[in-house]
Length: 245
Image 1: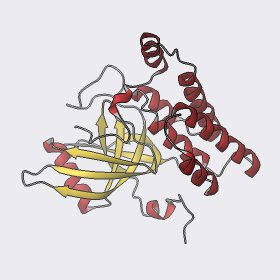
Image 2: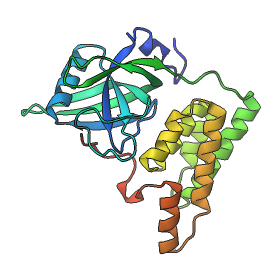
Image 3: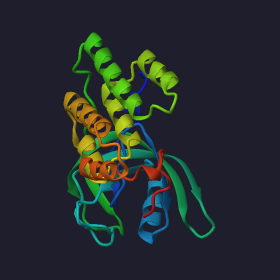
């Protein structure tokens, strides 16, 4: 039986290549669910092929200054490889999907353009065993969770926090969950995704939380602080709505 949060069995047969789905403002994290609405013809083809194969799609983020997926605009080289866990096709051929993140991965190289969509060879980058001792990991987990709770004083997060501590959620996963919940601007969220060192990821996420906690309380000041710290418009809500392609 696999350990909780362990996706190695799901990736045991990974062939090394996966279709790329680049978007300008979506960062997907391992273990989290991402709803997607697929309507562009080439990505309908991508989904159809994925459903017939390993059901895998690698979510990629466009580099700054590129807001369209037409052609092959430059993308960041760290992606999140995910598996389609739910799918529904509409009468006109569109798809609604739920993609479960499995692992960070690095693009080694893109394959020749034989399909309408992009495909890449990937090197999986799963989190290593915890770099902390059990006691240090528990202390870091509490620090992150308590700081995160301070961001949402009006919400009763005690049950969630107790469960996270009881189940000893791995720190790498916890950082990803908190980063996803913070509605960070996409290029800032990518910094968390690209950080494969769990200790450094913990430091980064904690710094982002503390920056938000120290933000000015006035309406104008808070807006300026959110922009400078890389916080997206929190009216977008969490979890995210269906992403557009």
